[in-house]
Length: 305
Ligand code: GDP
Ligand code: MG
Image (cartoon, rainbow, N blue to C red; front, side, top):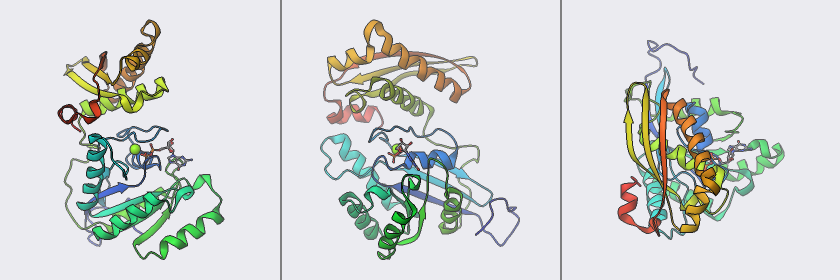
C-alpha cells in the first residue's frame, strides 16, 4: 500500500481525484468518519437519528490525491414528507455520480431490510463499492467474521474494512484503500478548503445541533434554522437566525422558562461559531412557528434543502 508522504515528483504515482459517496443507514457513523478523515467539524454529529439533512462535502487533500466526500443522508424506505423525499432522492443521486461508494453498516444490523435495499441499489448502479463495518469496538472479533464472510459472498465489494470511526481503528488503511481505487486526475480545489458548504449553512447546522442537544424533546426534527443575516467585518461577525418550529408548544420549549433555553442555545452556538470563524460573533436568535414546514416546498427551497 502506498505511503501518504511520498513526494509529488515520484512519477510512479499519478495524482488521483475522485468523488466518494458515503451511504448507509442513519446513525451508523458516517459523519463521525468524515470528521475523522477530514479533521474538522464539517458535518454535525448527534446520537439521535437523521441529523444530516443535506449532503455536505468534505474535501481531503493529500500529496497523492484529492477526495471529495459526499455525506449523503440515510436512505428512507418510506419517505412521507416532501423533506424525506428530497433526502431520499439526493441520497440516490449520490449513488449515481460518484467514482466510489462507501457503504457503511454496523455489525448489530448487518443484514437489515434497509441494508438489503441499499445493496441492491449499489449493484444496480455498477459503481465500485467498498464495505465499511463500523463500530467494531462494540462487538467481539468472532462475531465480525461471519458478517465479513456473508458480504464477501455477494461479490459486490472491492474490499471490506472493519473500522471504528470513533476511535480511528483501521481508518488510515481505509483512506489508502480509497485513494487506490480513485481515477487519475488533477487537484480541483485549493488544498486549504475542507468543505464547500458555505459558512452560513455550517452556522445554521451548529445552531440546529445545539437545539437538539439541549431540548431533549420532540423538537429536533421539527426545527429548521434560517440565517437571515450574516455580516462579516474585521472584528465582529453579526449573525441573525430564526429557529422555525411547527407548534406553539415547541416554541415554548425552545425559548424556555425566563428564556433560559434560548439563551443556552445561543451562548453555546455562538462560542462554537466563534471558534470556527476565528472572530467574535454577535448571534441574534429568534423563534417562530411555521406550521407543517416540512411539507412546504417553497420554504424548503428557501432553506436550501
Ligand atoms: P450518521 O447518522 O451515520 O452520520 O452517524 P453519526 O456519525 O452521527 O454517529 C451516530 C452515533 O454513533 C454517534 O453517537 C457517534 O458517536 C457513534 N459512533 C460513530 N462511530 C462509532 C464507532 O466507531 N464506535 C462507537 N462505539 N460509536 C460510534
Ligand atoms: Mg450524519
